[in-house]
View (cartoon, rainbow, N blue to C red):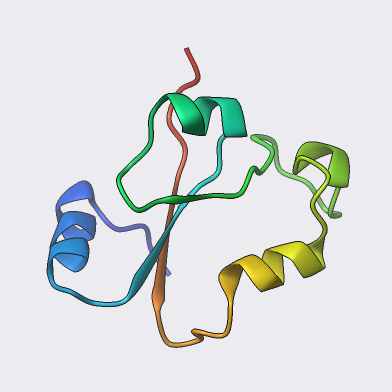
Length: 84
C-alpha cells in the first residue's frame, strides 16, 4: 500500500474511521512529543531481515502482535519524526 499524504492521514483521523496511530520512536522521544492518541512501539530506523529485540526496547514479535490487537479491519498509520 502506498503511503498516505499528511492531508489524507488527517482526513482519515478526522472521519471517525478506526485508526491505530503508531509512533515508532524511542519511548523518551515519544514522551517529549507525539501525535495525540498515538501509541508508542519503538522500531529501528534501519532495515532489518530479522526481528531484533535490542532494537525494539526488548519487545518481541508476540508483543507487537498483542500491541496491534485483534482489529484486523482498522487502518494503521505509523510515523517517525526526527529525534533532535
